[in-house]
Image (cartoon, rainbow, N blue to C red; front, side, top):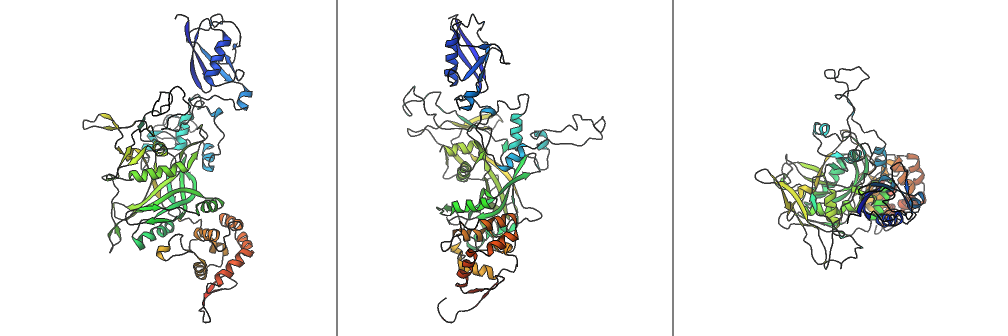
Length: 576
């Protein structure tokens, strides 16, 4: 037993302890190292010193003769050929930035990575005792993750930005050499051959860890901004006219939010309303055959799907136009079912991230609720669910409670599925921190609130005056067809063709209509709208496609003159 020793081996992927003996040869020890780290025999080198001196070569000398003792630290470095051919370690330890996969991050992430991010402060005339070029603790720049600074903002910021969180991870002396973001998994790890599969067997190697829910300290999006009130008002018109709730997808772009260090803002330029069945108390999404075309058009317009919005409105007094204030601290802000839906959407739109070995971490997809506020007026509240909630939803471990919308329920393990224990911490009546099993679970532990705003000076990606009918509103008698297109064009007062066609819903109709879809020939017009280029729009107007559109509109009972203004005329000869 006295011959048994343990040698520590430090690699770029972390440290491992290798059991050995004093009489074991260096060759046998190196084979153990290769097996433990998942290398071929020639895919790495081991050194006695961190500066790559004293290489341990494969030979018949014992570890005792090489003066390697119990508890010594050796240093492993992968060879260049191993790294280039992809023969890297397959281990559960965090990966360093050098071994992470190459990921194409979003433009806003690429921009923020290059920013300084520090919070610069002016010289305090009372506390600073140095010259104009000096710095002290009262005026030295702060890091973007400084919690005291965030807490003293007006209003206080509860969550640092995601990029500030990354700076915190990658700061310090090692510059984030061993920083890596791990996605939570609630599933049994595959490939464990030491026992029968679940439910007959499970071990500590393949068993997922228990989850203790914590309030997330960062958020991926720090602000949601609708470009103008018209976008929201048109969406609310459905509820005003029918009393039924409504859901839509938010399309826009991610930009820098300068009110928070390294913050991200989701700017909403349009709302697409998919097929759905709605009542006063429920929403049911239907299959959308146009979903891919909508995403494609948005991408060509320089936009993407940034979130979803739904209404939860109930009239309080129709005479003065007030609504009921139902979502508050005494009830709930998001129900468990809505949290699960938000988690599903966030998993579908994961955030590309260079510091995750999976290539993604979290999501920028936001949730907006149009509901009654404390003043009984319509308010827009923004949220996301935490990364822990995303994992629970992705692995089908979270259920809603039927009679308590503010409570979720962590599933119990069954022969078909193993579910790890989920806990949360709360205070008892004596003020002590107590851990509870998440059956049931207050969903407030899963929610991150996001400020939702409208700018003082409205912005318009699309036309501010024209209103083409919104899709999937047949129940209101608002249809998208060539008759409605002709009516729309007849009401246009602008002489600018670009201004006439700068309507998101009109462009969707031109691409997805069944009579003459322009999916393959509308690229030039979309580029014109994206860049606000009137010349490009005029060029497309002279195309055969637009001439055909004119003919289809004229057959709807309208005449198109050279300026594309339409005058209605009554047919007296035959059926229109």
